[in-house]
Image (cartoon, rainbow over all chains, first blue to last red; front, side, top):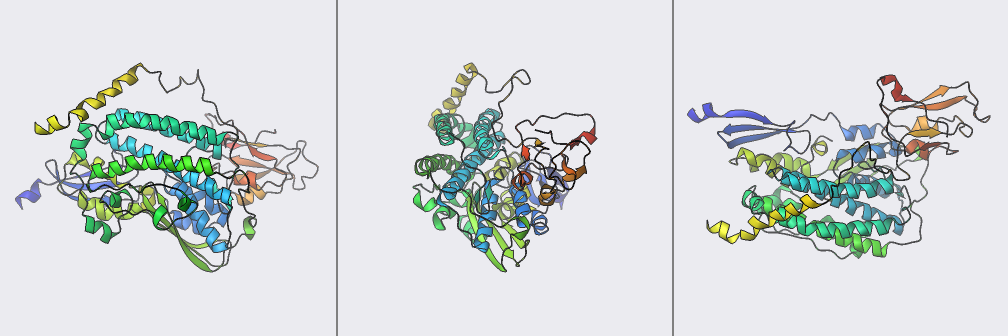
Length: 370
Length: 131
């Protein structure tokens, strides 16, 4: 009873730089030590799944990219592939390569954004400035390709919306050269930094068995030494033709997850180089699809998944023979990581480690309250 | 103490960031210097009145109900049977470009220009420039 009286309750977020989006964590503190944590969401007032049900297929396409701001493209790919599965549309080889390129560029941009957040969470603000600049260079290319920086609305049921601009692959190649030159700098200042190691090693340790049992995905799983990646386990687009590794580390802590991501940046660059080399010069980018109000999907359902920069990311979609989608359900990493995992990991941790642990889990609140 | 001895590289390597102090900054001095906007950027709408047929396909596909069809009296395309042209509410538009995709004569387009400032909120009801 004495201890209970000393507990202080505080809300960490939603207006807190260490929170990765609009959510908050209700913390019970005993001094600096967390004794209980409860995740609260609902600050975004969205409900994407219901918004999609009220619109036609073509109209719904513009909503899905907003489910996760740092990486909208996996949403677009899932949506397009689910519609294609249901409507029986086969996309061209060129469109598959372009989609793979877009998804890998999105992964790189998302990992750069993560690096900014993760380093900022322990006060290494300089790295955030650099990585956000590098992300901006990727967004410049997105702007050129799709016409938008953040919400690309480019991957469309039936293919992609625009042809590659002249010389685009050359500019992408130059950007990859630039990023490769920057990676040793990030290693020196961030990944090999003793400050980061001392803060991250042994913090936020995930139990390996629990990770498998509870269905954790992405870097949380690979940081426990478990080799799981949708691109390899259930290949989509052209991933089975590409040569890349699935990095794993055994630490199960924040540092292991950071090192997995560090290696994933290199693997993404490797994949993009192969895509540039193998990109078909001929072929349609878009299949013929029915017009707006005539585009109907049959009474059937499907589940599709991609490996996003935060882990397995899937869409369940059901049609009922009309031009509207009967049900669309998003299965992302944020719900399980943001509630089951985060609430348990924070117990008995220091208050200063909340942002550090949260950033390492890849939680995107809009995706929780989709 | 033992940890510090082992991780001596980790303690020294971050200082390589100091070299960045002598590099040219990556930021630009806006508004004196402006970032170039690539061709095909989804900025403001333009509508070539001599080809617009007033079909309202753009209004139909807009998922945000951001497009109203407005009756005009000025000179327009003789094939514009409805006598209306689209007006965009930039308080609702999400620049998805579906309206330009479905425009049969391709009169409605998005141009690269994307900077707009006003002190009157009614100005967000934007009549696309005729070009």
